[in-house]
Image (tube, rainbow, N blue to C red):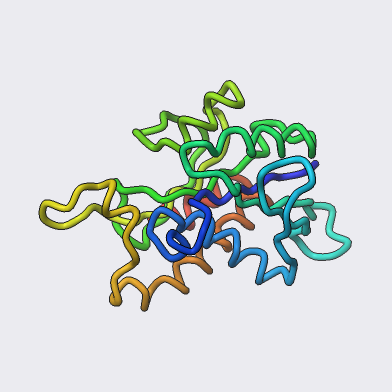
Length: 194
């Protein structure tokens, strides 16, 4: 069985360190931890790396494809569908990692299924694969303070205060993904859904 873990973001240096790219940052952190390099996929508009989680020789060891679409956020569905087809991954083995405005910064929520909550990346994926029944790791970025438009806020850089906690947040996000794949949703939610 193969898992597909997709970190959402926007391509290009302008967006690299923005709040909207936190999903892509989580997948990059996962790849670094596993000492694998994300590289361009031959059939999908995405950068991918293959790895395994779990102890060598353990029966619970899982194959994992890490991916970051190279499309813009609101066109994520095409690359996700292409990768699912290529690796023969069913929706119940798909995990989408994305930013979440409605959750306080540095908070995680792992869930299965649900609505798109106005998130254009999730909307695109639902349209492409025909279902919203897949795992989501929602990484809290909080809401803008004052009158800043949410669209401007998600495309802005993390504040200096937030950047101090970002490394720990990314590491915790990878820990949660590993636990989800090895031990299931219930245990992961009880440990990480703060």
